Length: 366
Picture: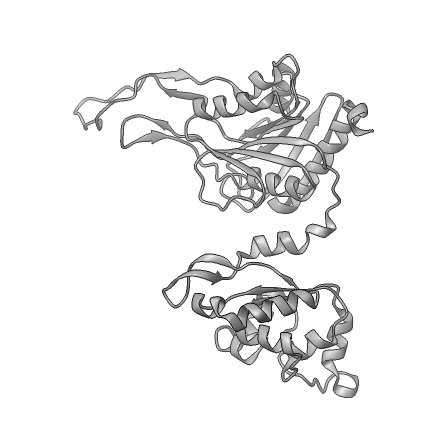
C-alpha cells in the first residue's frame, strides 16, 4: 500500500480481511538484507496495481522508484497490469494519455477505466473497473480456449409477469449464476449469446446480450436463436405461470379477496429440446426438497442432455447468493460440485458440459 492508499484504508483492515501481511515500507528490516522489495518482486507470478492513480502511472512510465510500489514495478520480472482510477479531467489530460501509451509500449496491460460517477461527484471516464471485471481480464489467459468455435446460447435471470401497469409476479433469481456462466464461456473462447431477464448486475464483456422481461419474450428470443447454436444452457428462473388477464389500469384494493387467474407459460427448455436438430441442452433445476429425484425426472421427461440442480431456501447458496453448489445429472451419470464462488463454479460446470458435448459430437470436435 502506498502512503496515499493508507489515507483511505488502514493496512490493518486489509490484513484482517485478506488474512495476508500488508507491505508498506520500501525497506523491511525483518527480511534478509532488508531488501523486502526484491523478495516480493521475485515472489509474484502476476503484478496488479489497482487502483492506479495518475501519479503512480506517471512514475511507472518514467522509471521513478521512490516508494515500495514503484520500486516493486521496476524490480518485477512477471507480467504487470494496472487498473487506472482518477478524475475524468486527469484521465483526459494529454500527459496522462502519453504515460498510458508509454506503459503499453513497456508491456504493461491497462485494464479500464470505465465511465461513470466518480468520488468527486463528476461523471466521465476514470472510474476504476469493477473488481470482478479486473479479475476476469487478469486471469483470462489461464483459461484454455476449450470452447473456441462453439456457439453458446444462455438464458439467465428471472422473468416478470405483469398484473397491471404497476405490479408484476416474479421470483428471487439474481441472474448471477447465468451471468457467471456467460463470462466463463466467453473466456473459454465460445461465441456467447445471453438472453437475460431483468437483473441488477453488469453484463459480461464481448457477448451478445438480449434483454427481455416476460417469459413469452424470453421464449421468443431463445427459440429464434436456438436453431443456430451448438449448446443451450437454460439457467433462467422462468415463471411457470402468468396472469390470464393484464389490467390496463392499476388494480384497486377491494373489501373482498381478489382472485388472480393464472395461465401456463410455454416451457422454453422443453421446446428447445424438442427441436428437430436440437442443440446440446442443459437445464437448471432449483429445488427445496427431493432434489435428485425431481432433477432426474426433468432430465428424462424434457429430453435434456444434462441438468444442473441446486438447493434453494437453504442457509447458503442458491438465489441472491454469490456462492452455490450443484448436483449435475446426465443420462448414465452424475457429478457433485461443492459449495463455492459462482464464478469458479461456472468454470467447473462448463468444463463438464464441454466434455459431454464433445463426447456426443466427436466429428465437430475433430
